[in-house]
Image (cartoon, rainbow, N blue to C red; front, side, top):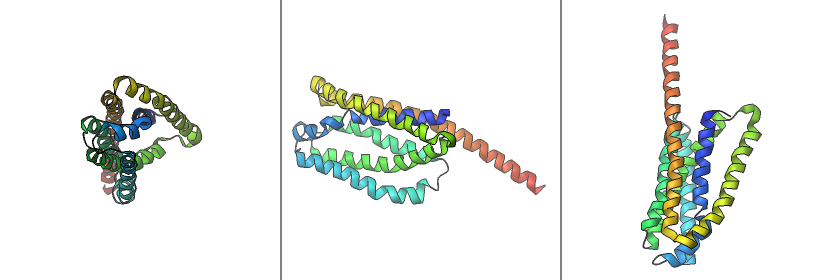
Length: 205
């Protein structure tokens, strides 16, 4: 497994596991933690996320992500939007703020997920595709299993806001790994571009 794939997978483990901390208590938070909240509002919040993600993902993938060579830039952009969401939850006093956060979450996911999978396919060892995907899937699954329990325990012990801050901090660490990956990818793309131009000059001679 190459280093770029390791960074990609580790960042996703941190980000997905951190949001897994919220999953068990999200509906409880909306129903009883903020003004205007209810179980219906919790369902609507999830709907907003999925509608924004699904409606934006296809056009972004076709007209932007697939045409962009430096895909880590789009991954970084989408992930930045995603990691702002827990911090918005911290300051949310009305359910409408949660709805805005969910729309941002959906847009960030629409940028990040297609770019992530495109990079994953690029970096993966073609001779060990099944095994390397299994490493990713197993790691994320175990992370989510652990975070589901921890999230509920942290919320019960310390409250919702400390939990959201903790989620944001872990997700930010995953974001920093993507910044490192983006710099590595950028250097390699610039090197390839220089070699391409050099070959073109040599052909003209």
